[in-house]
Length: 277
Image 1 (cartoon, rainbow, N blue to C red):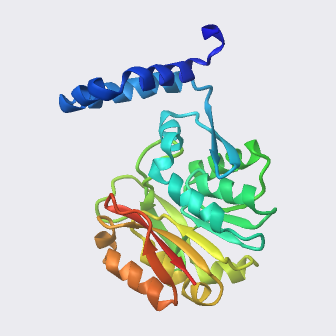
Image 2 (cartoon, rainbow, N blue to C red):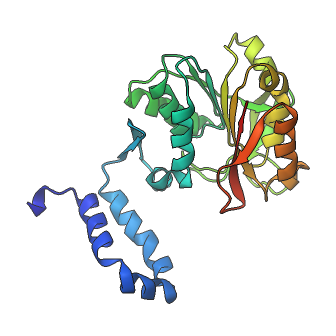
């Protein structure tokens, strides 16, 4: 019965049925897709029930989507579904995972579901994101440690740039000269925070820090050499220069730490490096 179909699924079924073939080609050619896309997804969001459920490699997670920003982030995982699948398939039962730049917990939740209690540690300095991350863990009855600090190569505090007012904004980062709205957050070297907070060193790390990749890697240099067997680093080629760094330097650092490095995605200025031993 049509009345039993949830509105958001009905909208997507209608889109899949009619927005295809020759019509899809024409709409894209004249640029109408750019005009219609945002209203369409906002309508789907209205009927979404403020949660989304995703299944990757047999691991099903429900995410809160109280804002349109979160809804769009989880709709496609910002193009990172293949990375998540690779991570989940690569994890071992004994792994300890650090999610650096965890945002609202996409990687944290999936890793925590695959592993046992307290084998996942999330680092997210922005308080609204950290709060939502904890909410997503609770929603799925998952256990992970959430630390509201920014990993870097210095200990102290630093200005942290905000890209918007909603949880799930994906571009919060250590501030550069171009930042307009900032907050002060605690920074700590990864090697030091492990010792100070009595954390188990990671065997797997995922890093997504909007251009501050090398700062995080330098602060974790000892841990990377001695403990980490697998790292996923999102490289932001256009943002690295603001920190005095470059994409080739990120790769070179990982190789210098003893990793074999491969590029998992290369269709954007932002791409993931997979570093393994």
